Image (tube, rainbow, N blue to C red; front, side, top):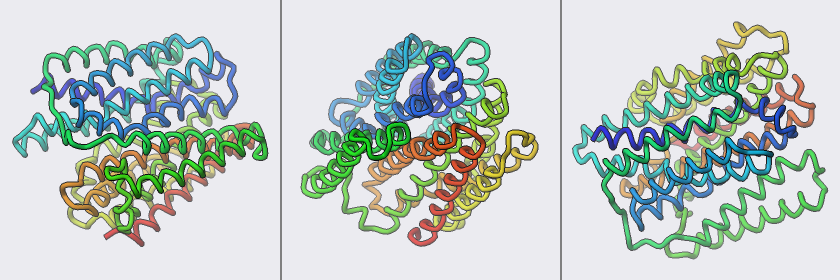
Length: 441
């Protein structure tokens, strides 16, 4: 079982690393590929776009055609895409490869947990295995900015993609040797139409938000993207309400607790990912720090989460999801308000307490919103609820980079832009706290 646990954990660690590792490499990518700020936003969001929009469909494919098979395909796609990222001669190539990375990630994340649940029949062993799986996820989040910074300073930005090759190949070998094939409900049918409409809606929305600042909000391409967003979104809701086996069962969104948990989770990631994007550029552009130092400073926010991850679950168990989520999201919002006062000359000693407070808020907030979403549906639909919650968080994170990153564009990446982006992140988190207080049980 150790080989199986390592196989799924290595795949998960690559996915989690690539959520945060790229942020500290953005200035180096900007210098070498001569890209604009909107180009840097796409480096982050191209991955998040395909990752978030395809995650639900990838889980359905694994149920139909085999979890091991889909997980293996995901590893191959992710490794090959990482190779293409490392070899990128220009921004268009890099962003196309990042989209492919997101496709691989969408196949890896939901199936890594599904493989674990299938392999460990004993409830106690399964709980320990999932705990280790979650712990590795947290370590990868912390290591991402620091590891990325060290690699960028020592070897250049391409190294953050080269490192995925040995990790991915090791995961492939372990998967081939240790993971047995399993299936879910083979009677279900993949909702291809719903999947396509969801992808078009998110892609066109991101295009409008990212490129609108550069092209002008009245530009024909931006207006067309806005129209495509509305049309695809409307058709998605209509289609999901009439198809027998929808990608997302919309009936559950009539439950305030389910809707509130997913909106609060989305607002949480919206703020976190927007903050990471803004602060990475702030540390390296405004304060002139090397990538390694910037990465270590960003990692400080995730240290409390890794150290106290089990404590957050106990808080939910004792006090319930509602007030645990409210407290965590409010602490994060207050922390970002504190960070929003930064200047180029602000010492790190003045920022560190706010970063730690944000990390402390994440400890109860993350398990609370997931628990609330799962608890709002019947037990047999817990997997669906978890997948929807994960998708909401990843999609909202992409929107956070697109929308809050636009404030940097408006102010030429200066201090005013950073402060405005941090203020927007704080407002999102405080809004999430209010929604959690109003809707959760």
